[in-house]
Image (cartoon, rainbow, N blue to C red):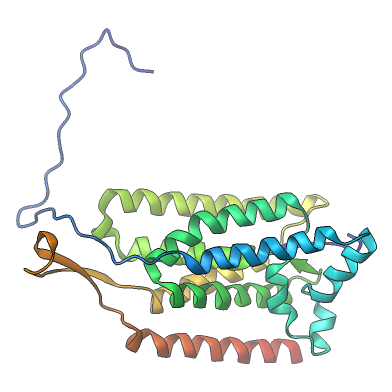
Length: 271
C-alpha cells in the first residue's frame, strides 16, 4: 500500500577437489512425488481486475477527475469512521501510477501463482482478501494519511509462502530452505524501503504491509496445506502426497479469523 496526497570466475590452473555428494541419513531414501497443484485462476482474475481499474483511472480526462476517483474509493480514515467501511476493501484495488501497479502486479504474478498452486483456489483467495483487509485495518489504525494499493494483500501472500516452506522444509529439502531464506530477505528489504520512503514525497504505507504480512502468516499457519508423503502401491513411484489439513479442518479457523477481524474493525472504527 502507498500513501498519497490529494492531489496527490574460477582458477583453471589449480586442480579442483573431488566433490562429495551428500548422502541421506540411514533409514531414509529419496523418492520423487508429484504435488497436487492447482492452476492459478484466481491470481489471473485479480491481476485483470487491478489492471482494468488502473486503465480506467488513467483514462479519466483530467487530474481533478483522477483525484476524485481516488477520493471516492481510497482508504481515508475520516470517511471510514463516517460509515464507508467498503474503503478498506476497495483501496486494495487502486494504484497511483505505472511504477506502483507494475511493482505490485509483478509480485502478485510471481508469488500469487505459486501460493495458489500450493494452497488451492479457495485458501489462496481467503489469504489474499482476509490478509489484505488485515493490512487495511493496520493502515487505518497506525497511518492517518490516505493510502491505496494491493501490497498489503501481496505481503499476506508473501507470508503464506514463507509459512508453507517453513512447515514443509523436510519435504522440499535444501531447495525449500534456500527459497525460504530468499523470501525472508525480500520481505526485510521491502520493509526497509518502506521505512526509508518516509523521508521522500512517495511514502510507502508500512503499517499496511506489516498488517498484511501478519495476517498471511497467521492464516497460512492454520488453514494452509500440510502435505505428507505416504506409501501407495497404486500411485506412480509407489508414493503419493496427501494433505493432512483438509477443508473439514481449516474451514473453522478461517471463519474464526474472519469474525475476529470484523470485530476488531468495528471496534477500531468506533474508537
